[in-house]
Image (tube, rainbow, N blue to C red; front, side, top):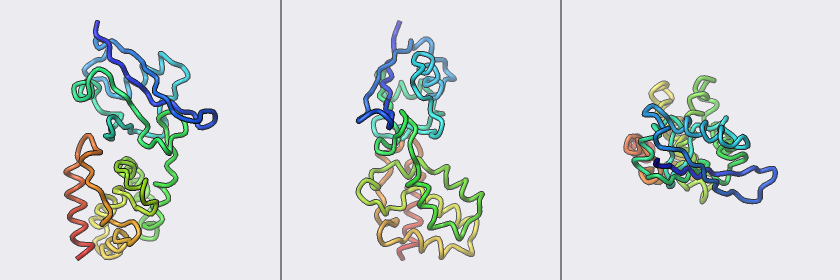
Amino acid sequence: MKKIIFRIFRFDAKRDYEFYLKPYEISKEDILDTFTLFDILKIIKEQDMYFNLPKTTNYVRIENKIISLNTNALELINSFGDDISIYAISEKRAYLDLDINEDDFLDKFKYFKNLCDESDYELYKTYNFLYYASNCIEFNENYLGDSAFIFAKKMCEKYPQKEKEFLEIIKNKEGGIEYAFNLEPFLFKDANKYEDIKNELKQKALQ
């Protein structure tokens, strides 16, 4: 009976000085074809009542790649093997196991606030995984994040009359699009799609 080992990032900001990886074993035959990564975490919760099932995040990091909790579990096993370490999307921002504090990401919306409405803010929040994808924010706290660039593209499409204002935002001299890293090493899926969008915006913003 083949076992799959999932090593889960564990950390409680209220009592731990540093994180640790705790291993859990699940029989591969118990992992159904339809199971997602979130289903795996639910099984782990059944094994360990003290594990915090993610409530505020829909993404994690495996081998430095951002992974949606909706990703098929068997697809992950095929890609990463039978011993998988699962980390919080941002170790620095983690407060309880895989959940993180996203205040730094949410704060960057202030640059767009006067050009957008509440529904736009809700859209912005769905790009949180892109903000934490690359490690650029570790070196530059003013970096707007790849989330801001993809969001700006959507806003240019929604409000074409405001395109100039949105392009000015992402030209930010201290943390704009010219500082962006290539996302290919950091995303499990769709990196090329986001890179195409960024390259298009960069050409418009920096011309």
